[in-house]
Image 1 (cartoon, one colour):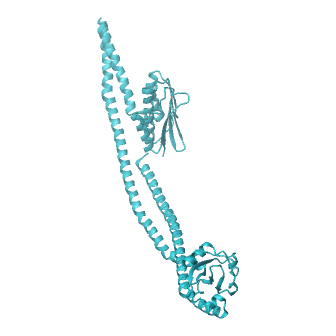
Image 2 (cartoon, one colour):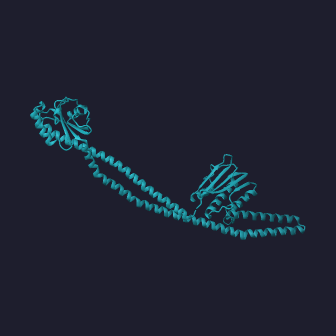
Image 3 (cartoon, one colour):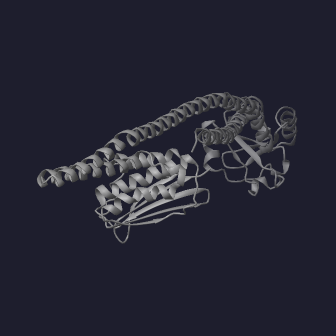
Length: 437
C-alpha cells in the first residue's frame, strides 16, 4: 500500500472519528439536557409547592385564624357570611379554589362550599400532626374521598393544610385547595427561566470542543503522514540497498568466484595429467567448494532481491524461493497463477511474507512437505504456507521470533491480516493477506 493510500485511509478514519466525537457530544448534551430539565422541573415544582405552603401559612395565621369567632364555631349564618367576605376577598382567588376549617374531631367548621359545613370526616395522621404542631404539609387530593364529593373530577388539586389557633386559643386545621395545574405552571416557569441558559452553555461547550478536536485530529493526521512517509522512505531505501547489494554481488563476487571455480577445475585437470593425484584431488575439492559457495550466494541474491519478482511475476519468484527447499529434500507444492500480476508494493509484501514463512519452516518446523498458495479475491491477495512439521504456532509470534513480528507489522501497516495457526493434521498454517488497490 502506498503512502497516499495510507494517508487517504487515515483521513477517512480521522473524519469518522470527528463525526463520532460530534455525534457522541450531541447525544451527551441531549441526555444531560434531559436530565437537567427533569431535575429543574422537579425543583420548580417543589419550589411552587413550598410557595403554596407559605401562602397557606400566611392565609391561615394572618387572615382566617384570627377571624374565627364563637358564632362561626356555632354555625351562625351571619358569621359564615362574614367569613365568606374575608375568604373570597383575600384567599379564594388565583390558584386557590377551596378552603376548609376543621375541628380536631374532623368536623368542618367552615368551607366556602357551605354544604360541607357541619359534616364530619376523619382526619389522617399527617393532618392531625399539622393541626397540633401548627405545621404545614401538602399532598395531592384524593377526589374520591367523601369530603371532596363536591369537587370536579379530573382536575387534580393540591391540598395544603396548616394548624391555626382562634383568638381564644382553640386549635383548628386550615386547609386550602390549589389547582395543581397552576402549581405545575409555576414550577414550569421557574425551570424554563434557567433551561435555555443551561442548554445554551452545554451547546456552547460542545461547539468549543469541536475546533479543539479538529486541531488534535489534524495533528494526528500530520503525524501519521510523517510516519507513513518515513516508513515509505525506509522501505524504499531498504529495497534500493538490497538491489545494490544484489547487483554488486552478482556482478562482482559471484562472477569472480565462478571464474575461480573454473580456474581451479582446469588446474585440477592439469595437475592430474601431471601425475600428482593427491594435489589434483585437493584442488578439485576446492573447485567444488567454490561452486557450492556460488550457488549459496545466488540463493542469497534471490533472498535479497529476486530478479524474477517484478520481471516475471510473483509465481516465478516463489518458484525460485522454493528451489533451495527442494534441494534439501523437502516436497514442495506451489499453487499460484503464473499470470497473476500485482502492484509492486503488494508483490513485495507477499514475497517478504513468504520468504519469512519458508525461513521459519527450515529453521523450526522439521517438516517433510510444504504447500504454498497465492490467490487474489475480493480486492485482496492471500498467501498461505502450510507445512507438516512440529507446529509450535501458539507461541511463535512475540516469543523472540523477530521475523514473524515484522510480518505482523507489515500486514498491519498494509491494512491486511496475519495469522499463524496449528493445523488439525499437524504442522503449521501461515496466513498473510493484504489489500490490493
